[in-house]
Length: 493
Image 1 (tube, rainbow, N blue to C red):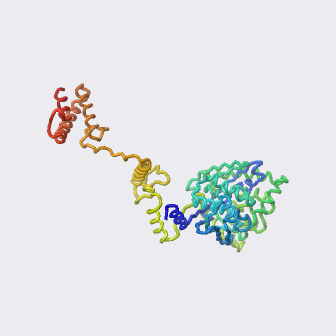
Image 2 (cartoon, rainbow, N blue to C red):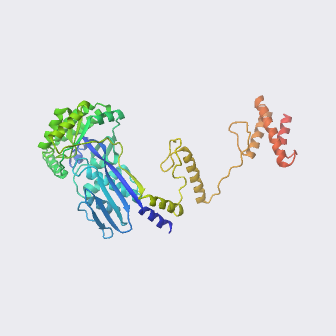
Image 3 (cartoon, rainbow, N blue to C red):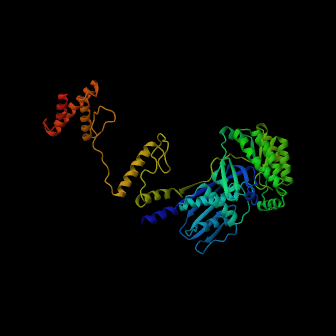
């Protein structure tokens, strides 16, 4: 079995995983939808939470793609019969396979911690996780901006799924962000929020599932038609300003002001379309405000899904109890703010494969010296990606890479001369020949009176020591002894 076969066998036994966080639109949602975003520019303030969409890719020996998902169902298609059809529940996986022109067989598992139609950017987050896992498998590197743009193009343009632009970028970047959209130009500005402010906001926010999902395409169609008639343009313009004001309020830690702006944002959002709210949502919102909420809104396009509230700290649980009383189907969901975007990794299938992979890598795969750190030692700053994380491991890594480079180039390894002991001066050479030259120059300085008297005595002492060593090497003190020459020069001085 050669190196290529061994590597292919090793890849077939690996799991390539990726996870992308879901998002909550805090203000400005809807302004990222075309044609408004293209003509006037959209501004959105959002954040990600610790609810994720997962994708796992496992290479197989056949030339088929198998997709397994509790939400999208199961399917199996042949990769050798041309481009995959872009219809059905697994169209997200099909469009990614077509884009990367995948011919090798694989099995894909898709899972999401939020149901479809939840308003948390579920489908966009899923396709971001698919692209990230496939890139990890194919060893392709993409910047965050390129990954988000590819996800947007595949979902919105290739598949024709209607929606805004914030979902893909939020899943890729993570954290609190102000996003600006103007045509094809996208600007992502991270909002620096202190950890104490994040903790306080966490303690005063509530995420509740209404018990009813919705089709975002119907709501977006209604919003676009209203914009073309000119009936919601002022509300869209006001929402952009609220997004900027709310980002400033959260950055400076004014949670109460952020809650009031959230309430104002919801009043404008209801003017986008008549399908954004309904009697059930209005009843739940009024109940929450009466129980002590400062402000809230429906996440996503509207019409159902999740609702997000900012409350007074001592009234949060009263609000949760009141919502459950008003709607028996409502579910209050625990969550945390997630500062990181999409991540991907690889992992072997089982323990037996780990041992087998180690044997294959040692016997057939190219050796990468000191790739992994040995033990936990003092951390070292400035360690580059792919290098060990401790200073001792990094030193071994650098030496190993240098030796490998010399072997590849056919260079003879450099072996420094054996160092000599007893050098009296700082910055003095360490090999014998240069040490003698060094002492000779110091003797000349002593002859000219440049060296101080104490330094001259030290030079004389080490010259005599060198004379004894020279006598031992050369078989006696003769005129050719280097120490004897030094001693003669000092005697003249």
